[in-house]
Length: 55
Image (cartoon, rainbow, N blue to C red):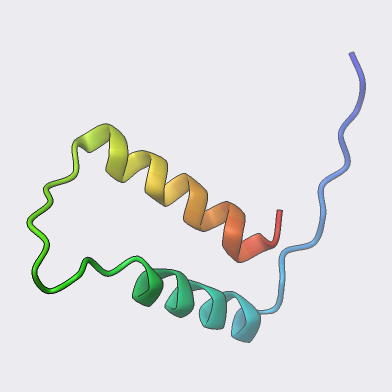
């Protein structure tokens, strides 16, 4: 098994700026009617974490 090195997380300000952008970019259109499943919400959280770390 190969050892995987972990990267340092980004500084708090960069993380927050990316998180805010991700959350506002993903807001639904005011005329849209969309309900996300639990699986979709979990996937969105994982994608958001990857985006915030610039993975």
